[in-house]
Image 1 (cartoon, rainbow, N blue to C red):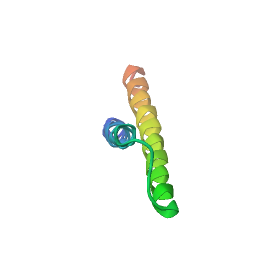
Image 2 (cartoon, rainbow, N blue to C red):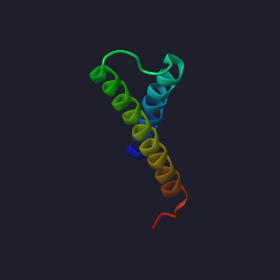
Image 3 (cartoon, rainbow, N blue to C red):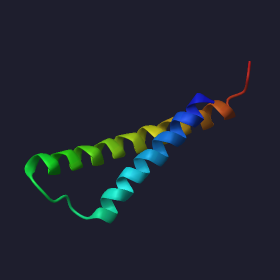
Image 4 (cartoon, one colour):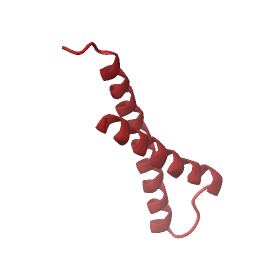
Length: 67
């Protein structure tokens, strides 16, 4: 169950961060502000990928026969 919860949170939160970057356009402002925006985007991509990994892991565990 924890794989499902972790996966869903990662996919939703990461997807929303990526969507915010896509809708917001390219980062603008001073150098440190732009770097922070890119760091947030990278964090969103990592969350999304890890969330997909956990969902796949949960699906694999569900298909595996119980001992």
